[in-house]
Length: 324
Image (cartoon, rainbow, N blue to C red; front, side, top):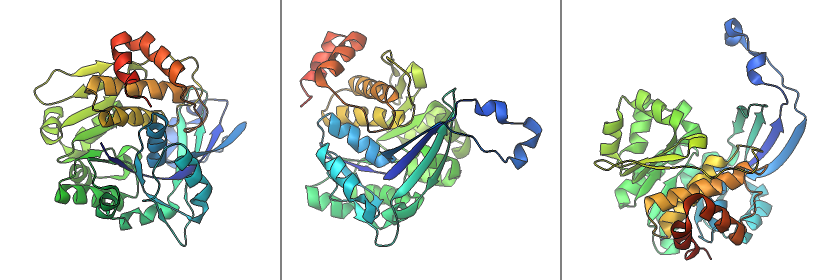
């Protein structure tokens, strides 16, 4: 199964604030906030939604096709991704803009405040999926992740017009979208990915209820934080999958991307939805235990041992048969 992953390619600058953001906020002064948080650590990491998801899939042995835009400074990052099993030949390189950059501060309660510089990401709208499909011999699924908003819309429209199944996953871009834009990105999706808060926001902005959404998408996948994930389809009982126990809670950045990487890998292996969700939860657990979105190491024996402990021998046997 050939899966293209569209989405941002960025460098993450991750800082840690030892206090709590909430302690610094004055309720009646939120209209004029002017704050500076003194961070005690800085880590510069590779990131971006599309790259993070692709890296996770590559770690599992699935070779995803990364589709996005970066700057001339991407070559070292490209080599890293290729070395970890990602097809980067469809990444557009801007002649004038730097690769996008995410600056994020995390407090003691794991709350986050971030700023994203789009840079070369704005050129993702110039990428034609047909060119990608022709190069690799066709596409079975396009995951449309957070990216340049116009690129997300164009990729969605192209998937519809060419009959390519797609997954809608607006994540960080949801806050800036109105109801019409969200409806345009959602209608006809094979999969819809959100977290629990985003799920409620989608319903609020579109005016669609939960049943309305299930009539418009094939499968609705809602991550529930530490409680795992809920999978819903029209006329079917929901599937709920819990998370493995983490060995440490180091940094939540990239956990959602890792879940998607595992889930999409399960689809690529043609496993069932429950097994795909279990894969996603296991990979997400590895990421929360690591500082940085692509710094974890997937050691097969260790991965399967923890997977077996959480989901059982039968589930692990299915996954083991697919792991390369």
